[in-house]
Length: 308
Image (cartoon, rainbow, N blue to C red; front, top):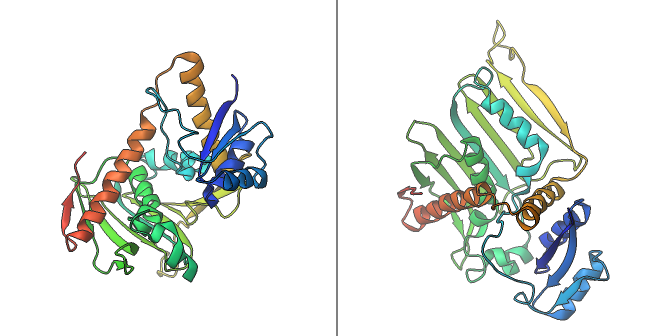
């Protein structure tokens, strides 16, 4: 199957990471870059190793060719790391994990003064959801992933959300409730030390991982499992102790994401396949919960029902 051509919109930092991933992926190639200025696009192409044949455009529209039957996938990269599949195996094993009872997720990083004053993620006319739409998205995705993408019945933003002078969220927390009684909480922030923790608690076992968005190392990632945990006789320790599992990968998670996307696009383009529906479904459900949290904050921390 021929490589899939990719066009990049914009020259932000994340575009450089994705460009590298496209280069590393075996079934994709960098085809075009578009920015609001030709000069900026040309510099980005040079700095990021675009091939000489790549098209350079001074607008976003010049790159786009919108049509029906296209594949949609958001760039939640950790979903494509092989660790994620291994962790899901644990969650699906009823003898080890049991029934899901709660999920707790946290993604924070401390930004500098320039970020707080100039980054698009703190501008109401560019990215009005702020930390909730950025780091909070990953927290909510991790919770839905653990819950097999079953939407919660309701969402409640916790009091104390931090907003900038323009009303954009810099830090917030929320809780979720499901019909069957399981619960989840998350905290996201631009104002605290880099943390990427997820804990998934079942009736028999617990899953923990501490680098869920970006692994500590590019070529491997670990997670902890605990099964039927208890105390030692004098309550001086755990018995049995949690187990650590390490999963290696030849390609970074962003390259695996690009490779999978390219495979799906190639199936549509060359084999007449239909677009894979799960990826846009995951995106839509994540955004529904993001929007519900924002609504709860806007309404003075009221409970908001989540509707599919």
